[in-house]
Picture 1 (cartoon, one colour):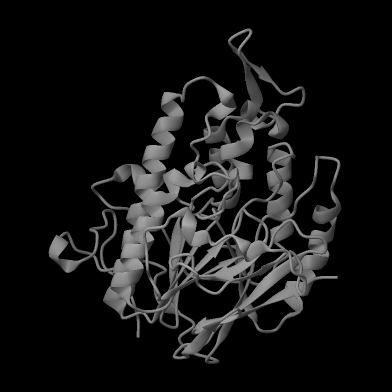
Picture 2 (cartoon, rainbow, N blue to C red):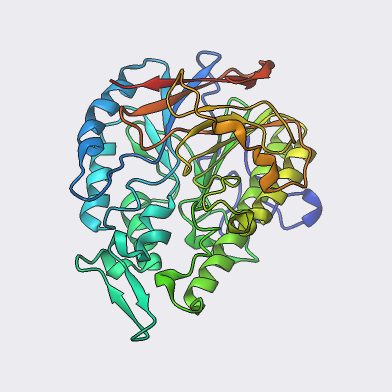
Length: 398
């Protein structure tokens, strides 16, 4: 059945009114309504990585990686969960364009959500930004400067200009109908129109939504360039994007409820539970998202799958329940104690059962991707590799 974002200004309808659109939202049909019962996606992120700009091994391995994904006849969509280079590589226009060109070789549509390393963290010295000097009271910029001397807002604008030229359009090849927040924003918040990178789509009764939610920086609260106080520009960035993301998440679940969707998949770059710096205080600004997710997931009452990146190490669990089963390792078949920490402890306020989270493995050598298969109507038990209509396996290339 065709699904659409309902166009109404009446709050009682349960959906946000969407200015600038009338009638069915372009591109929001339930795609893939015909054909085989199941469909499969290739999910990866934090790739390609290098320890510095001279380390191009993963970038050079990417064409073969793309060939490997293309060779799987099951795959119909590719999802990249963010971070197209490491935190030790320079943020540059030439590199961003290099990745965009590589992605043109995917045989299927690619959906990408930006990570911290390609914009929020560009201010760091190691990425071509700078570092505040308490001696001089000035920012000392990198000898090899990055794009706009690492200014995060300029780098986000660059990412948008390269990867998000047309709202709702996907990368790679083929066609996937998505709707962008740039054209489906809440009319009460016209500033949300800038978030062209936030998209959603529906396929065979499953709603997918992406959020520009950078990891590793407590929702971009690590002060740019290490200055003594946060700039007005950074404060505005956090406030506007956080609000836009939360409203986009609201709309995705409203659409899922209105259309009778059987499941929701939420894609973001940040691992909202990862103790990156070893302290929970570095996760406090993710709490609004965790709280919103918990509320929406509970109200939805059907399976919700979270796909995250950033922390690099594969993990399969439910961080909304204390002591939930967890599987995780650096490489398939190894044991590394990834699950020795119960991620529920990072936000210990919830008990939600109809959700599962997978952190896709990143910065790997050899490269790997997650083969995610969705079988509408299925009710697989919750295991290390299955949950409701979802099943997955790790694919190592090389």
